Image 1 (spheres, helix red, strand yellow):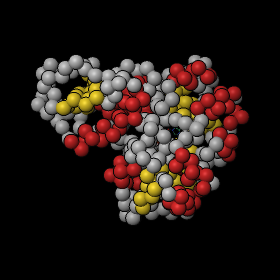
Image 2 (cartoon, protein in one colour; image 1 turned 180 degrees about the horizontal axis):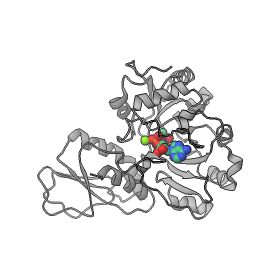
Image 3 (cartoon, protein in one colour; image 1 turned 135 degrees about the vertical axis):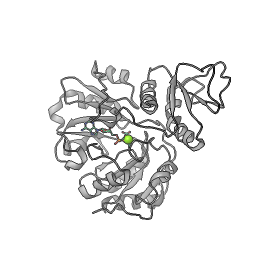
Image 4 (cartoon, helix red, strand yellow; image 1 turned 45 degrees about the vertical axis):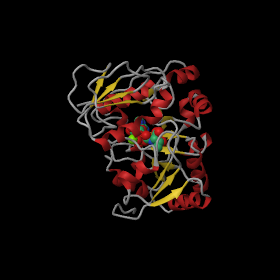
Amino acid sequence: MTVSGPRQTERLRGDVDADLARAADLLRAGKLVALPTETVYGLAAAARDPDAVAGIFAAKQRPSFDPLIVHVLDASDVDAVADVAAVGAHFGALAEAFWPGPLTLVLPRRDVPDIVTSGLDTVAVRVPAHPVMRAVLQRAGLAVAAPSANPFGYVSPTTADHVFDALDGRIDAVVDGGPCAVGVESTIVSLVGDAPEVLRYGGVDVADLEAVVGPVRRGVRVLERPLAPGQLARHYATRVPLRLVTGPRDDVAPGTELLVLLGDVDAAPGYARVERLAADGDPRHAAARLFAALRDIDARAPASVDVVACDEAGLGAAIMDRIRRAAVP
Ligand code: TXA
Ligand code: MG
């Protein structure tokens, strides 16, 4: 059994071969290792080791109704955990087009411990692109279950330091692979219904999915007891209250900051601070900086922050999804 008590958290380097081998050894021994992916840092454990996976829930204080994503090195490894043959041609087309990359597919489950899937008859699977994650998966020779490496409900980590901030002493190691390039979590698509359905907006634009498989149902529901916690009304939440606005307001309370998600605003008098995530208007740059900006807000602890909404094209959909949930009162 992986103990959830205090322990020494090793800092490992993604550019040091011996450290990658160490991370793989730890995973094989049932330990908890935070690893960089192209989306956010994940907290990994051997997917077939229920005790190790139980340690993830303990470290994150994550409710056990919330299933995990299984990460594998290659699309051909998915067969072992999911019934790929049952879902038809969409699986192969999506895997070919978007893997390795920020797409998670929900498939009929095969042989995975209940704790990974929360007892659902489906399993979520992803082939990550980050070279450090891939190097560790290859060395370990395992499928790993990995949620984002943050306490449940808080902002996902996009650097190794973010992981240390909250999980130091609660997990066995963090592999530092630098900042995550995508910055928001993977897009989750279910292939178990009669048509593909988005369960969470993320790093792959739904329009790009549709170019490959045709119409995708955009039925991301907000539930009390969700299929994906990405569906929880309040999630990714900062401690500082966020208010979603369409532009700078006229009279704001003293100490209020303005966060501009995309592009710029003409003038913002009265605000204590104005931050632009991507003044160049590229949603990819905004996504890559989003979670770090939310963490910086909590570190500065202003009275409140007005967040200027952005257009929902491309990654804008994933960005606005995160902000809406963070901004719910
Ligand atoms: O980019 C990502 O997806 C990151 C990196 C580490 O891979 N992982 C991530 O994991 O965001 P997590 O646990 O924070 O979010 C996974 C989401 C949850 O909302 C969970 O409910 C959903 O995937 N999920 C997992 N299995 C599912 C299933 N069988 N059916 C529906 N949703 C599922
Ligand atoms: Mg998460």
